[in-house]
View (tube, rainbow, N blue to C red):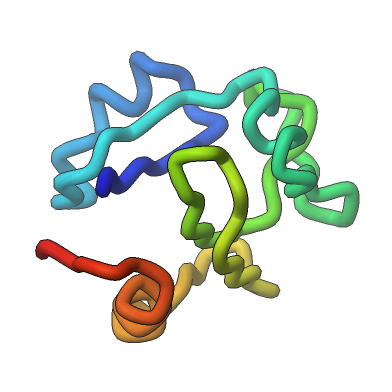
Length: 103
């Protein structure tokens, strides 16, 4: 099992600010929204990126559990771009969808 984060920030911005999050996950850049679009998560609403941002839009904040074949097993969407899934909710989803869970 691997935890990944995907952001529209550039790789340089991710590297410079990684320490602020305290996250032990692999952090990936999706400036061109290829991963975002592959999962149908482009936000076409009012959260479009500012002109100074490299992306033309922002993704809908989401937490996904994806199996090794790329199938989405669980999806949690956030209505507030500043809030993410509660860790307890994600842990419960992981326990429900994975046979063995090593934390």
